[in-house]
Amino acid sequence: MVRDHSSSLTSATLLSKTIDFLRFPLIVGVVFIHTDFSNIIIQGSKQVNMLHFPVFAHVFFLFSKIVFEVCVPLFFFISGFLFFYRTESFTFEVYLKKLKSRLHSLFIPYIFWNLAVLFFFFLAQTFFGGLLSGANKPIVQYSISDWLWSFWDTSHIHVQATKNLPINSPFWFIRDLMVLVVLSPIVYILIKKLHLFAVLVIGVIWVCNPYFYLPGWSTVSFFFFSAGAYFSLHKKNFVLIMKSLLPWPIPCYILLLVSAFYSLGEGWWSYSYCANVLVGLISVVAVTAYFIEKGHWGTNYFLASASFFIFAYHRLPLVFIIKFLFNQIRPQTDATLLFLYFLCPAIIILLGLLFYWAIKKLLPSFTAVICGGRLS
Image (cartoon, rainbow, N blue to C red):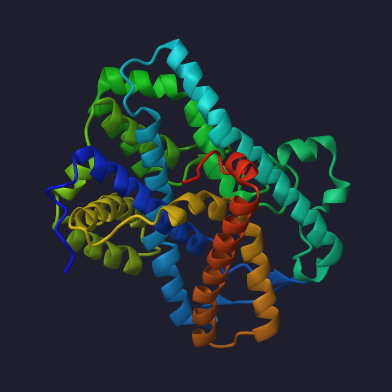
């Protein structure tokens, strides 16, 4: 029988354990978001027409486009909370100290992992060109400006690009987070002067345009980072607050899931989406804290420390695994596509854990640098 830990955990400990526990499952959700078969192109041929596979399309939409959409906003929220955690005053010296800290935890890994993807793209274009779409400009033809843009916005390099992403596409999160860190004095002033009103106004801006996105700036990053900052600067333990709302977030979230699932295409779908993300975030935090407090769940610190590595490395290998398996299996049924939808992320995550364990064991200092010091 599991012992009830509720009386032995302090509020600060529960806060810390909840954040640590969430790191790995949130990264798993990010990997599933990127397991998108809708635009798999091999040698100029699109592999999957979603209209022909309705069962798979519905499962994919439910998980990758609704359920796991809470992951990135929650990461921004936690980042905002931790950035201002235990900050009594935000002097220029404090600001510089925080910038120096993020130089190691964000900027250096950002440069390394984008360079790594450039290198692997070069290898892939040289030796495995048959698995590529052929739509992107070859690395060997990059100009100096192409190399610079590859770290910020590859739409300046590839005319077919529909999104303003760095070459390691998931690192748009780190890019936007670095911009928020640089602009953190503005966030601090807004939260300190206007308190909750500032968060509500920024939240309304996000709800009105949740998909507004410029390189380094988006409504989702600004709102959730600011919301996390609000809890931190006003010394509010968001874990305890959200946990106290149980059980109400759970049935609300289920209803919102159903609403978002069946209302796609409606004019008000984006509002349903935003409500789903907000209530989903509260539900995830509340349920996690509840089970940790009861002693039913505990943090695996190896998984927590490996989370950044999996986030950083997964995108390009995931694309190659998907294309390789599509070449080998040639899926023609909903069941096969569903099998691949769960198999591909599992392979990438397991390989990531293995690679992380190996380089951490063999090159601990190097691993610490490329993971921003995130080692257990």
